[in-house]
Length: 362
Image (cartoon, rainbow, N blue to C red; front, side, top):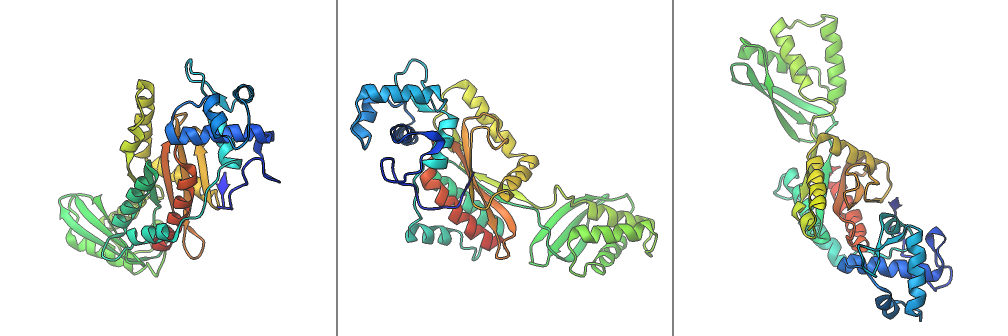
């Protein structure tokens, strides 16, 4: 669900308090308190603890009845033989959608985030890595920063021989960003053919993005409208094919993975986290993350298996799109952590960081 960072709802008991899922004020107060205690300690919460903490005078017996009703509704569960309760994924979802209280970042927080991402004297990749590390530190979870593949206008293409059967392809975007790829070329291709291939492509760039350049060149080659010999034509085709629509550019930077292991003691949970690590390394995950960000206007929160990325691995993900000044999505920012992450703190941090990164990538 998108979170546009509106003011937090009033606490239960106040007039016109929005209560999700048909809950009455007492049930909402119990659920909220259990989730907040779970986020803080990770421990089951019992009725006596709740009776001391709730903002209303309710006996432990009454609270036990409310907890039983919330358990029957699938919002709470009792781990093992504990008398206390923990929230289920459904309970966490109800909390996040209707009971969560969060505030705006302070000016000091904003200044600290902006200062840590100042790009002066650093490469873009180093800046994105710093953003991921910063998110991890602020959230006590793993930080994610996704910069998608570049599809902007091109400025220059060059082929540099590396030895028999290999060449380096250098591509420069109009914004000055440089990408390099090693290319396999037919045996016997002379350096002059590589230079001719570069000259041919540069003459047709005209500020075109790569996809359009590939189309123009493919049409010319298919119609045999070029003066290129066979070897040079192969170099041109292979050089353009090096950057496929799925693989050119793009980077997913993850920092703080070890934080996901902090509370893991069970073997099955360890295996689930290992699967999470493996999926974070795949190109498919990068594309799916970008799809999730593109489907939102603001911050989105995925609990458990809701994102479709990691299965029922006991983790939550908070992700936001990074948009440039033209409101085009140029990346995604997020945090992955255990379901007891501090949602109220993380949501505004992710939201503001996404805005800063959007300006940098824009």
